[in-house]
Length: 359
Image 1 (tube, one colour):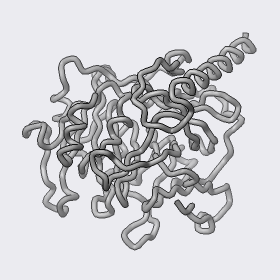
Image 2 (spheres, helix red, strand yellow):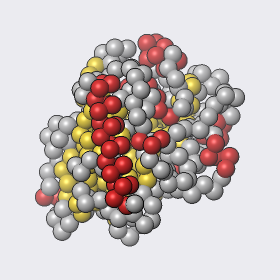
Image 3 (tube, helix red, strand yellow):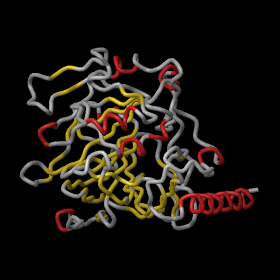
Image 4 (cartoon, one colour):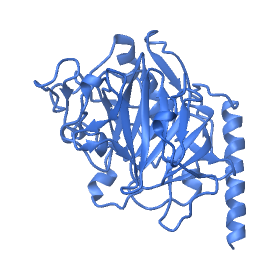
C-alpha cells in the first residue's frame, strides 16, 4: 500500500511538471494565462487547520473570513514595525533600492498594523491566489492605483476606505513612515461575497520525517538587492530569527512590536525583476512560470524548483527527488529574490565569515 502511495505521488508530481511547463512554456514569465494547471493542494491531502498556516483552528469565524494584505514599510526609519509576527505569510519584494512587505493576515489580526506604504503593480500577481484579498496601503500614482482597482484585490487603502479603515498618523514617528491602520476596522470593509483564502502550501504532520533533500544549517544570508538579511535558526523556539542591516550597514536583530521577527519557514524564490509598465522607476517581479530557490524549515535547507502556471494558483514547490515540499505549520516568509542571492551558513561556522552574495 505504501509503495502504491509513493508511486501515486511521483506520478502526480510528474503530471504537475508537465502541465505547468505546457501552460507557461517553462520560462519565468508574467503571463496572465488561465490555462488549467493541476494544483497539488487539491490532489494531495492537506493537514487540517487554518489554510495559510496549517495550525489548528481556534476561531472558526477567523478561519472563514477573507485574507487581508497590509503593505508594510521596511525603511530603517519604519522599524520596529507592528504586526509582522501576527501575519500568516509575509512576502518581501524589491521596490526601487529598498524592500517592502506584503503581510497577509487571516488567522489573526493586528491592531494597529504598519507603517503602511504604497503598493506596486507586482502585488497584483503575487497576491492573486488568495481569493480576492483586501489590500491596505497608503496609495500610489494614478496608473498603479488604476491597476490595483482593476485587479482581483479589494482596495481598502487610505483613500478608498473613506475614513473607515482605522487609519491614523503616529505622532511619535516621522512621515512618511507613520501611517497605521487597524485590521479589525479593515475587515469590516470586506464585500458580502468575500471568501476565505485557499491554502498556499502543503504542511507536514508531526509524524512526517524530514525529506532526504534537507541539509542542516545554522542560517542563511540573503541579498535582496540593496537590502541584506540574515535568517538564523533557533532550535530552542523552532523558528528562524531575522536580522537586517541598519542605516550604517550593520546587521542587527530586526525587531517588531512584540520582539524579533521570526518565522517557521523561509522560502527564497529566485525571480526575475523587470520594469513596471505603470511606473518605470519601480521593479516588477515575475512570479509565474518556473524558477529555482530554497526552502528553509525545521533547521534545514532544501533546494527546490518552484512552478506557477498562472497568477491564480499558488506556488508549487518540488525538491530534487521530484517530491512536493511540505512546510512546518506556522508563519511563512517568502523572499522574492534575485538569482543566486542566498548563502547558507553551515552548523559551527561563524556567520561573519560567510559573505553576502553579490547581486
